Length: 133
Image (tube, rainbow, N blue to C red):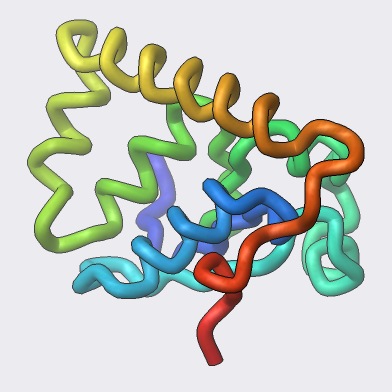
C-alpha cells in the first residue's frame, strides 16, 4: 500500500519561460494537496533533497511528495494535475493507458519548446514570466 501524499514540491527550471509560466499557473489553481515550488538545481533544492541528481531535475520535471516520494517525467505531470481540484479527474484519466499518449505528446511538445527557447545566447525569461511575489 502506498503512502498518502499530503503536500508536493515541484522543482522547476527558473530560467525557462515555459517552466516559470507553468509554475505560475499551478500556483493560481485551487489545490486539493498543497503545492510548493522550488527552483531546480538551486541551493534550496540541494539542501532539501541532497539525494537527487540535480542536473537531471533541470532537464526533467521532478515532484517530491512530503514522505519522500519522487515523481519524474510523465508521473510528475500527472501528479501535479492530481493535486488540483479542477484537474484531478483529468489526472486519473491521463494515468490510464488511454490517457498516457496525451501526456507523452505534451511532454514532447514542452521539450521542443524548451529546446527552442533555451539556446545559448537566448535572453533569460522575459518580464511577463517573472516569479510573482
